[in-house]
Image (cartoon, rainbow, N blue to C red):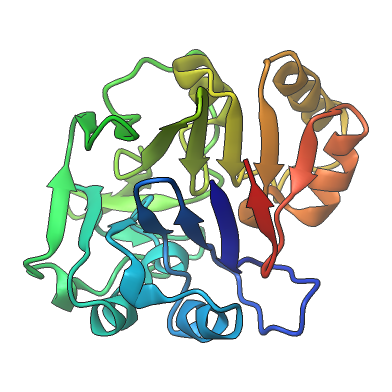
Amino acid sequence: MKITALVENTTKEDLKTEHGLSLYIETENHTILFDSGQGELFAENAEKLGKDLSKVDLMILSHGHYDHGGGLETFLKKNSRAKVIMSSEAFGDYYNASDKYIGLDKDLKDEKRFVFVDVDEQIDDELYIYTGSIREKVEYMTPSGLKMKKWDVLVPDFFDHEIYLMINEKGKRVLISGCSHKGIINILEWFRPDVLIGGFHFSKLPLDDTLRGYAERLDKYDTEYYTCHCTGTEQYEFMKESMGRLRYLSEGMTIEI
């Protein structure tokens, strides 16, 4: 399995970056696009990195925020066949701490290639889609000021629009998570993957004993971590002191599992 970061907040290559995430995943049986960043950048970087978007047979949208689904329209133009799987809540009304709309382009909502899920789905022997909305949390995680509109008022986001991709290949269970808004500890408890790739949503946390405590708890799981995006680079460096199996996935990098 090969996983290439087309969009991520940082890069060690000669590539443009943005706050967002897009991963190009090549398995034994599938070529998958996981998220699409804010706009066209994922496609520009795919071309530079030699990754053919027309070969993608499935796209997964992790949740309904613009920095993960802003490139949906571009992908639909670049690829004429792939289905796009997302939560049935993906086109909800989502806002940041400043009450700015950060959701998806609602003009795309009726696209016929979109597949909306609200329960776990097995795609085949290799791929599974999991939701967090039906699972009980073992730990509360603050929404960090992120909001959704319900009953015409803004309330803290429940993140029921978040889904996860599990890939089973060669005896390993690899979980891909966009931002882990439901709580990285909860996600580890629910799925216990061999490898976890994605953001931890720790970028707003201070470098203190709370963050160190999270790192020490994550290190107790028998999981390899490749983190990125909303984890925060300073938080990553701080956590790495307590986590021997934590690595960072920057834009342009390819990891093989």
